[in-house]
Image 1: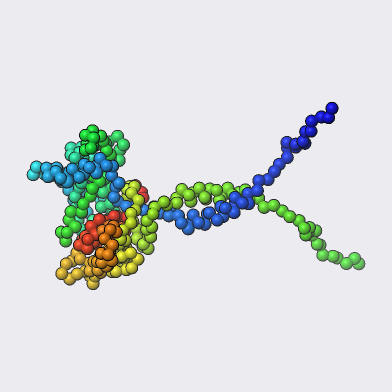
Image 2 (image 1 turned 90 degrees about the horizontal axis):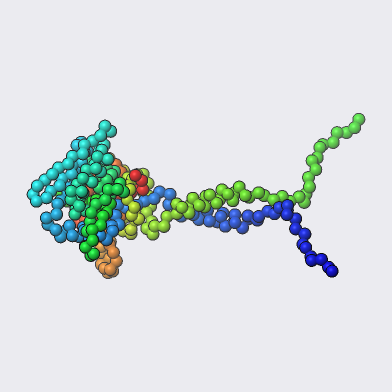
Length: 182
Length: 165
């Protein structure tokens, strides 16, 4: 009886993978991506707010009794946070540090304090002095926008469902109040 | 005496060789992954203005479409056109209205042109300004631009920043 045909397989044989087509694709792709890539990522300051926060902002605007929070930035004295409610004013001052810059961690803590005592407020009025550089204004806006700590959240009511929820947003709405002052 | 002959190395004319492209493929793969990661998916294209250093911010919002205004230490630009010169972070006095120290006349004129152009197509969203300003420009100068833009019906200002902490 004839034996079954067994093809001869050399298990020690080596083969070379043809990388030329792969390389050809990459050589075309890399220049395309190099040309179209943006290496400096630019963003805009305008937070995409959750619907609950957006509703709370709208509610604040229709409520004349809601507290008003104003922020004054002064190159010499630092930042003054002025909270006005029912004709009463409370002023929090954050001075400059040893580098003659606003002490940002202290400022953030102050914003958190103000937000805790007035969770219904989402809008602040910014009043920087004319000589304050743009980067300082942006830094103050950064500190006011959102809580840096994930553990610190603020209560907000969902107007549609009536349920209480929480948000990390503090003062996402910023208005330059002294723009028309001249 | 035996004549000296010049040495001739033996060269095989029909010899072929295979180029090892493995390391080159490795390099391209790494480069490709890096470029794919940094590839921007933003629809709006923002050209950085020469000599302008944007402030850093932790905002996470992608740019939206709008009218582009920029102020660098040397010039105030509307889109890509220079409309006023800037010296010591102050807009040239020639561009300022003599009756209103906050009013930048050439900027207002340009914005009015946009308003006129969109009168025929009122459904088109206007009123948004994508604003690039150098980080050292004082608020007093920025206020002039904000004031003029809001007077021209562009109160919605989007401040462009660089991602950072």
